[in-house]
Length: 495
Image (tube, rainbow, N blue to C red; front, side):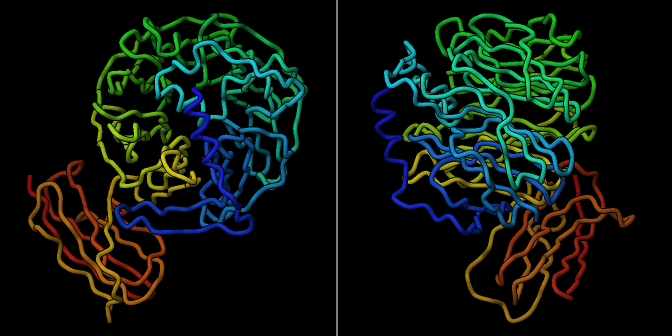
């Protein structure tokens, strides 16, 4: 453990650039890559609509919150006004266009005798990473619960409610309106997460239940005040550890437990509608397993697994069949390598696995719609640790490479190659100047079937990849538009 803390202390940079946000292009993928001006991790994201969002992050080693907001779909991120004693925030939820709640912990230093949690330094690497990326250490005397409120879309924040030093992180919140919500709060000792309720906008919290001793719960999903789920794990990587999901139908008065003994923990879960849910879990053997329920969480079936990848966060676009998860490729040298993603568009029936050439540990995820995805995280493998937010405008699957640095003389759209194709083809195009670019695929009826590019791009030559595995054989058209230019070409998918 001393080695880990020693490394983390060196992740703090000698300076912070406080007044600007930088944008760079990751030319290996169709993800715009935004750097936030602090050394640490952008832990979680929350969006009200395509434009209005909040990023909650923190420095690493010495933990201090870094709250940012955007009003232009993440193109620019501006530092918010918030209490400086906030340590780290683990969840954020928009109630309406202006009211936002966030939860986590604040720093306290009234106990200078460091209290070490026995066995923390013996935890597996993935659990240590999970805790440290969230701001949790073995020094429980350093922090207590914090709950924040903004009434102007994340520009200004104030602390709400009073918490004692026996509370640790407020891991997760779910509000039904501005007043009524649930929370999972640690008792400042690992494995004793309690279920709380507020009816006055977080001013007061009533403990409903200690669901089960020795269980760490950090995920929650509710359909209404009565029916919902909480999930996590038991055992912290020790022999006999297992993942858990609990279901309640009476507002938390009682819970029914589902155990997942073949994995060490349930990392996250989501529901695509009132009956169909997807859960992801991880095993120390280096495998992520995907589970699905089709009967509102009464039974969960194992439907898919991925070797050598650890997925940590999954979100869905309601009633569309689309779910998207993020994590890392497991690396023998660094432990965690490039970003890994998986996606389904048919309620978990099939999955697309894609890796992104970016050595970042992703933790936050927000799906605005079926095309616009944002993820956040930090380069915890590097020095300094760079807080990042990545944005996709084509559903996170289609990839575009920029070929070379020279500026073409004219706009052009080349014929796709190969053509006919099955199921993948490449589309090359040239941009003589920077501007907003759209590359869209249509069927023979003129209906849009895939948005390949929808963003501002610099001058240059580009290559987009279209995967037609989800579509029927036939004729399709692709159209490029940019700054007054437009051209359409025909292609043939043959299966």
